[in-house]
Amino acid sequence: GNGLIISAVACGHHLHTPMFFFLLNLALTDLGSICTTVPKLFLVFFFPTAKFSLLTVMSYDRYVSICKPLLYGTLLGSRACAHMAAAAWASAFLNALLHTANTFSLPLCHGNALGQFFCEIPHILKLSCSHSKLREHGIIVVVASLAFGCFVFMVYSYVQIFRAVLRILSEQGRHKAFSTSLPHLAVVSLFLSTGTFAHLKPPSISSPSLDLAVSVLYSVVPPALNPLIYSLRNQELKAALRKMITDGFQ
Image (cartoon, rainbow, N blue to C red):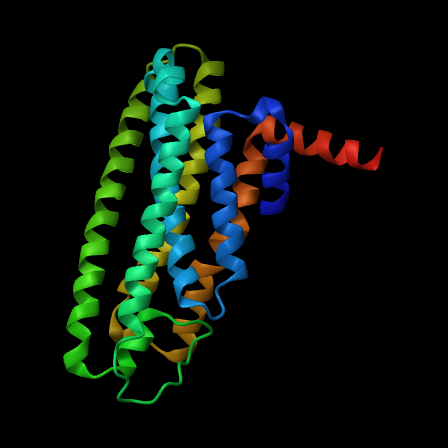
């Protein structure tokens, strides 16, 4: 599904707009998240961070498109889109590098076997010495603060988007605005809810089987569902996919 989205956007010249440019980048992160979960820690952090950064940028794209349509071409020109996408990938690279370098410098005092299918930070911390965890916890707090800032930005964007949509008099106009915004909101909600539950669930309900199931829930399910969420509600993308498939058979 993600491969089809990448191909459709790359081949369909009428889809060379900021919204589909960011969607192509998001599909790349989903593809990478699934392909590299086992067991490369750097890429486990790199792709989800890039995804969250791109979701933040995409909320800005939807905000400008709906709330400031006359400035859309100015604020989201090709150079601005390239800079925002580059910033998202760069922030993911730095975050992944920071976590990877710090995590692999932790001394392990309780063996080196994880009851998990990839190197998840909470499980690695359980194996490390108690005095060595403070540094990693400090990094997590800093990253969580930045992520919270992105979350607040997305909430603000969507509050403004829904206020603008509700002022649209045309029912067709409201439907079009919602059809481009709701898929992104669904992806953000799915990604944040599963990831938050995985890392903030109470220790009292933690168990090896539950931890494994929750890890699959947030690392595999959102990337697998994102293509369905976007393709089912976006008529332009569905038309481009049909054309690409039809041309391939001819």
